[in-house]
Image (cartoon, rainbow, N blue to C red; front, side):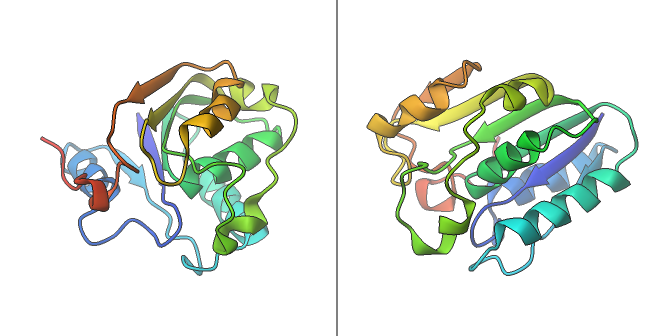
Amino acid sequence: MNYLVLHGLGGSKDGHWQEWLTESLRRKGKKVWFPQFSDWDRPIKSVWLKQLNRTIEQIPDEPLTVVAHSLGCILWIHHAAQRLSRRIDRVIMVCPPSPYHEKAEIQDFFPLPEAKQPLAAAAKKSLFVLSTNDPFLPQEDMAHFLSYHLPCFIIPEQGHINLDSGYGPWP
């Protein structure tokens, strides 16, 4: 099994759980790709999408699990909308930001593609992980991600599931 980890705005650094996951999997002998997308603080969708596509082309055609956080989830949704030929085994999308969020730095990633079926078709299994008090996804906006009709695990009051909400290395 190969792994692809997709960070969000500002990267996943300084003890973020995605760093911990990457190192933990590598210590177990797993192949992990953790591309560091350019200009973390002022991302451009077309640039990140090209970088993601290039990274996926480098990964052997073997089972692949994608683990995305925050804006990385939104990037994955845009990637899936391209309807490329490679189908992924598993995708876990943790705390995507609201498609109605007004944060200027990420507006290039919105709106999301209207067609929702390509996201389900891009992987054999997909899962959203959401938190009831994510400051970047108000509860009333969760319905957008539920409308993809993919499994969704909603965790009570865990914030954005990042360092600010206590998620560095996991046990």
